[in-house]
Length: 333
Image 1 (tube, one colour):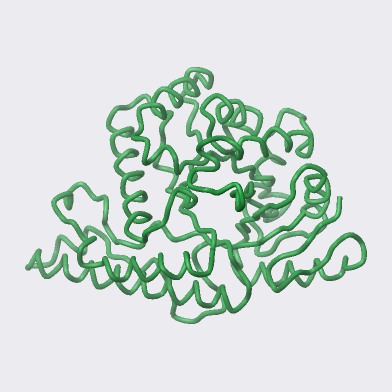
Image 2 (cartoon, rainbow, N blue to C red):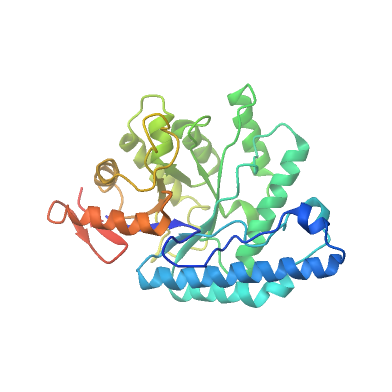
């Protein structure tokens, strides 16, 4: 099984390259000239996009083909007081440059809208804002010229005192989404509410691909073995949404998230680095069913953790682990 590793948004090795520079609305509202303030927000966004392109070039230099964009590329983009502002025309060139680079080098990119984007909510106002946020993420991907292989990943959401009803409400609300949004969605199990089994059942019902978070599954489960679930999870990537815009010659591989517990007292928190042995155990089991897999590291040390993991995996060379380049390995079952 060919395994490619990626990381989330920020680099620990590239200096002064934040893709998430922002401004609070409190500070924006203090500005005397609103139009000048909007231009300032656009300059911040342009700097974020410029730094994103820098990070993509850094990734290519290290053979990293899997990357999650920051959702904060455009400051205050979905704030209710700025709904009349359209920053995309001013940022068209910067977005296009990112998309061109991604497409040229065949990178896999994604977004992870924040935890306020909840489709299981019983509150109409929260649902409305959640859809607005998904529309914002879609528009960024479209501005980059990226097809539906670039996904937006979310959790099912809260249980609100009745998990079964919340799950059913999620499915009703999901089916109301525009097709352009729905075809880019993936769903992930979380560490407190909707576990892997529950998330998988909803993914199968909606024909939506599931991103397995193996750390979340370790701390929120029903006693099931992660590896035993994998064949079903992998099949969710064979659905119409899983393979939207993918060709039969180049199907989109399944994707998982991995991190390690911060400590025994904080098992849900993310450690700086990823422990290699538990991950390798899962990868060897998954390799019995899967030819290709993409792994998003959610370790605190970002790309530094990825490079450290590759060093740790190198110690298993000759034991069914073959390093392919700086950010990918081949795993024998």
